[in-house]
Length: 135
Image (tube, rainbow, N blue to C red; front, side, top):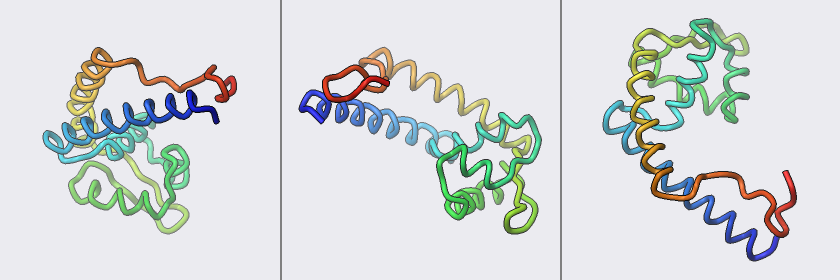
């Protein structure tokens, strides 16, 4: 990897970390969730009320099933999602309270993203850089 590619990669990473911090902060302050919870709820909303298998959800989020179960427990306890089944057959669905929270939190995510995008270069994958290879 060339120095230019490394600099571009680190700049992209720095932008991601900064935006991630802002999104985690606004979501925690106003909604009691973080960006990973928001992504999980959003994936469940894509299922339009149908339960999603833990394996499918874990693959979509790039998480292990055990890590996903640890993340789901607090969301179940607060009534945002429901889970049923045993072991490999465990399925998760978004509850009405989760959908309401997702809609309101989504407004904050869009607002924060819009402000961040206006203040900096867009967060795009660094392609076409020397040593980075074409995508």
